Length: 245
Ligand SMILES: [Zn+2]
Image (cartoon, rainbow, N blue to C red; front, top):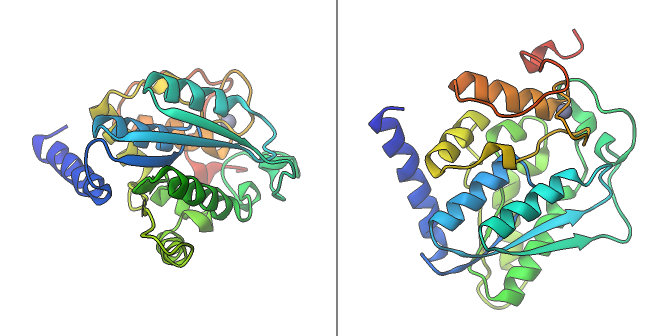
């Protein structure tokens, strides 16, 4: 990586980090155990934030990623809350409504998911006196997931400002304009142990290699020529566009 590239990455993260007031400030992080939120976790640790990470049992068909979230939170000395929803939601293949497809399509969208997660995060941040909330949404996610888009993030911040009479936490989507390639570049600078992240929608011990999450993960490492320590059950899809071809 060139010095200029490295400087640009670090420069952006400093700007984003400055929005919550600096080292030692409290932040709430939506932590899934995947690459994006794990890199945000390492950013927050790097900046010296006092982090309360939250993860959700929302009816997803497997819990494997939550174990990775727990390990990352423990490693970084974050407080970690796992929130169990007694009435799981979501008409998505991720919640059992059909078969996980090869590649990425609309069937993996869980309607309302980030709206609910961020509402929890807001309530917890107000309870904790936290100044910021972090979510690991990326520009890649935005192609399929409406609640990862810039417009949604901005609109949620506006709604949040009416939810309490006190000043509300700032919502930071550090990577909302960044691709997964950029996220991994940032993670490389932070020393993120990639084997401590889990992406696969199918939830087996080995990443399946064929689902949209596996394809995106594999392609991003390959594009960067960064060693991908992931063990895939089958050769990963070379491009998402080839899904189903
Ligand atoms: Zn997979």
